[in-house]
Image (tube, rainbow, N blue to C red; front, top):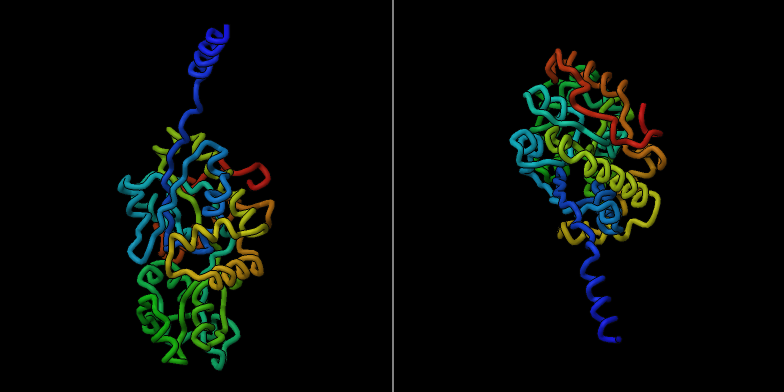
Length: 321
């Protein structure tokens, strides 16, 4: 009788279907692992993706990262869009993608100067040499020209080192609110910092964009990814970021706990993600406003249907316009 019971139990165990394997997802970020990606790392570390049936691997970017080009070529399915220009330029080039959430309600882009410089606003930096990256010349620079009277003669190439700015004390340096100011302080300079968003810059940042064909065939995966990412950001910024930080430090040997702490503090103090209950939100009106302003400046192609660049479908109902 015991032998019969044993074989019945074995038969039952092997007849019960096992849990299907989690859906593998590769998410490409726009830079090396950092606090600005913290919500996604937190979602991995705390199992927020896992509990929704996803096996997410974060693929960090770097100086040569070009997520828009890789998305257009079909080499990426889900990736980070650094700014609102990228998805709009993609649809202008004929690519079929959708932004499904925006981590940052404020773009972290800043200009900074040495503390002795007589400047109280971005407009006061007109005429000064500005160290900016190549990508910035084709994105926010025309906005600076139109809004504050900047001129192309001010441009100096930024090669991701603050050394030239530190030596040339009357120049201007572009950067991220949560990064370059910290590096400057480590070098002994406490800069004056001007956040674009505080001067009316309307773009979102740190967005999640998905190829249309992948979205169509993996709608439930995208929905789960957005929900888990939002939970990750809520837990990272308003909870204990330690689990996510451990993964960031693992993926980026150049990162330090102090820089992470500085960045999180800036995100909190400046409400970069909005409020905890509205993380990830996007609005039709804001997308339309950004497109109208930037296309009027000639930065983005005129005649585009801006709604082809994003969808509110996967956001929680309270986060929709």
